[in-house]
Structures are given as structure tokens and as C-alpha cells.
Image (cartoon, rainbow, N blue to C red; front, top):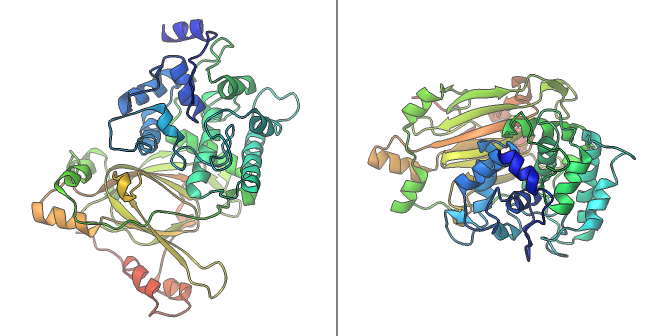
Length: 444
């Protein structure tokens, strides 16, 4: 009945908005009444239900994008308005497929010239997208934005969002596993901000999830030139942690004890430290651009848990890219990349996955392949667990690796390799900063 009623109104005039937010899919859901037509006071459960009922997009994606969306609010709130999404650098980003960059133009109004440039990379007469044409249009838009915008920003976050939005339209208007979106349906979304019910579109039978999007992102990356995977900078917010206040204790503790999580999710001790379980492995194999073309599964997904008893992971590297999504708790990531030239110092960054955006914490973290990383529960939270005896302190995340995780693409950082990264100088400040993460962490 929902689809029938939506098909009936598909050709009706869509809701006029003075300044529509820069997200065609959410705009379309509001224009069809699947989200509130006013675009205001949208809660996370309402957003989750709209994406599921309107597009067959799963709750894992809804929660992930919802975390970003609520970060656009100027104050802590349980609801958001779609026009909050105009905020630059959260969901709205440079190199949009259909909007101008915020620094040089209107970032909320559809731009036909930009969209025509993206469409120009389709083969003449094409009725469906393939990965090559979708990847080419995406990369051309990135390069045009870089050339025109002197304030162009393209960090791993923007790279992930850029690939993700392309994968999303391929999935929703094509097939979550193979893409092949119908061109006319995608054009209707971007140009008219409606769903092509009148033209025969219906939600796919297969749900669009973070895992399925990871598969499509992997395919898009493999259809892209190597330089398309290069970021301008890897920027994460450096966060100063303070002892949690009473309200923050409620934010960082969670309703289920670590013992229950380990039992319920069937978690096992991880060689890195912490606990994990693999929940998804896409069986299809593709040549990995990060492993000299060797065959790898398209994507893998795990739960990963740090507890006060196993509070730190060892420093390690994956050749593939890894997407991290926070479920509960808080963890600090230390990230290191060897120097760009022989003898130059490595680049070291930190990021905190948590729920307090005002302090620079993030609910999502993208780590490109080739970076060393280690995670740990902040000492402030461990002290809270020690002083209160709480068993609800730690960090539970989902990791999606694209192409999928294989041990042959993984390495632990050895003391010898660390010393070599710092040119044999064990007195360097960075060496002392990284050294604690190299030593094996005993499980209690």
C-alpha cells in the first residue's frame, strides 16, 4: 500500500523549499512525505524508518549517516532539521556531484552545469551505469573542484563520503551487489529530487547495508586510476581528554556489560588485543589495488570491543582501507604513516571515537591502507571503571575493510621496524610516543 500511494503521488508537485539541503535522497524522501514534508524535527528513529521503508536501506547505514547528520546541529538535540545539513564539512563536502563548493558558490542548490559534467562520462546512449562510468564521473568532479576551489578540502573523510554517495545511488537505483543503476532514475533523483515511482522504480529486494556499500566502493576504487585514491591531507581532530563529568559518564557507559557483549556477540580474544567476531565476508573475489592485484574478497565486517581488562590494541597496518563506526563507549586511535621521503619523520595523528562532537570526537573514522594504527580506552575512562567498578566502560565498534581483510595484508609493528621508521633514533619524541603500542598487551 505504501508503494502504491507513493506511486500515485510521484508526479505531483514536490514540496517547494527556499533553501533545500544538499542531500538529494533525503530531500526526495521529504518531498514524498516519507520523511516529514517540513523537513523539521526529524529524530533518528524517524530517519531510520524512512530510509528502510522508502529505499530499503538498512539500520546500520541509517545510524552511521545519522551520527554525521546530528553532528550538524548547533546544540545537543534529539531531532534535526534537513537544512542543518548545509553545514560545511560534516555531510556536505567539496566536490559534490550536483552542488557547488561552499567556498565559491551555492552549496545547497542543484547545479545543472556540474551535474552535466558528471553525466558526460557516461558512454553515448547508455541506459545503466557501470563502475567505470560512475567512477570516471566522480573523479572528474573531484578534479574540477580541486582546480576551481582555492580552499578545496579532500581528506579521507571527503574521499569516503564521495565514494559512498556514488555507491549509494548505484545501490538504491540499481543493485546493492552489482550496481547497474538505471541512468534515468538517477537523473530524476538529482534533477527533480523525487523518486522515479511513475517511471517504474521500486526499492530493491536486497537491503542496502554498510557491507553492501563497501562492496560497491571497492568496485568503484578498482575502476578508478591510482591517483583517484590520493587524499590532499589526512586530517583528524586532535582531542584533549579531561576527566568525564557526571553527564559524560552516562554518555560513555552503555547499558550492556562487557561480559554480556562478549557472550551475546560471540566475541573472541583478538591477537591485537580486545575482542572481535567476523560478522560478514563477501565471498566474491576481486584483484586488490592495494595488494599488487592479488585476489581478495570484496569486503569484510567485524565487531571489535575494547574492555578495561584488554584496553589497548597493538600497533598494526592493513593494506586495505578500513571504515570504523562507533556503537558505544569511547576509544582513542593513534595513527602513524612513515615519512614521505627517506630520512623524513613519520606523520603521527590521534583521533577519538566518541559521542561528544563538541570535544572533537567522531562517530565514524576512515583509515586509509598503509597507516599504522592502535586503539585504546582513554585513561580517564579506565579510571572511571576502576573507581566505580563499572563493567560498562569500553568501546564497541564495527570495522568494514575494503577489499576484505586477509592476514597476508596485515602486519604488526615490530620494535625493529619502529626504530627503522625513526632512522634509528630511539630518543625521538615520536618514537617514545609510539613505543608503548608495539609491546604485546597481555590479556587478563
